[in-house]
Image (cartoon, rainbow, N blue to C red; front, side, top):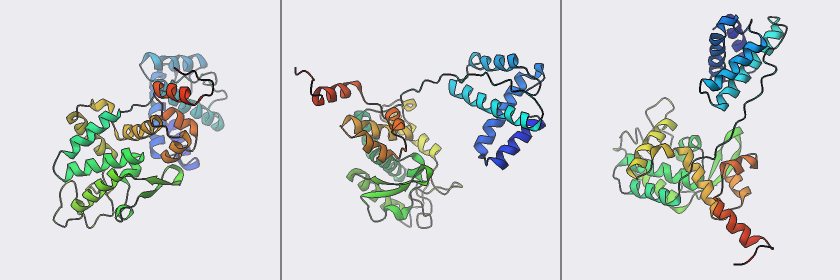
Length: 305
């Protein structure tokens, strides 16, 4: 990494308060570009054709459109900084067009697959199985993000609430309803979690931890990665391809099944905590047969069979 790239990253950290994750991504992107362009003199000496050739080569290397778009943004911001510092008097990246990104429909599970998963977990014994069952029930019943589920405090559920108050993205609060099945799972988990003698891997130090799903890790609660690993194993036992499931897929299944059942899109938007309904429209695709049924039933000019 050149001194100029390091200076750019320092500016991003100090002046723009970029997160460590963002700084790491910019650093990787610029270091890669610097390496590819080393025969052209690196980023500071590369010409417009050199930069366009580097950018075209990203697709040849097999990088996705989203990754290419991020690398384009990294390089363009670097050149703006370089011009401001007087290192260059032109921006060779100015003609780079953003790659077209098709937004794929999110993965989902059928209702039968969800039932199979829950039944498989219900048939297993032990604290670990009960914990995972509770996690799946909560996520599928509420549509909470994985970070919101794992970040639940014990005090939030101790009185068996019908609703939870969740602080989501942008520190926005929303009400999250819990169905009977999820509440029963939580109550069963609390009985195991709070037994003084139940200091197992699934329920470490139950009395001392404030988290609903405590862990020995640095955060004090179960991590998204561990949740995903446990979910993979449960999916395989239920006859579901593990590549088709994740905690986020459970959230999407929640929204998709609501829409298939006739729920209003605005209601689903509120439950998911989306600020823009266009996000909900993409995130919660509705089966085409359901759309056809709604039009046939609701449109005044629809023909009757």
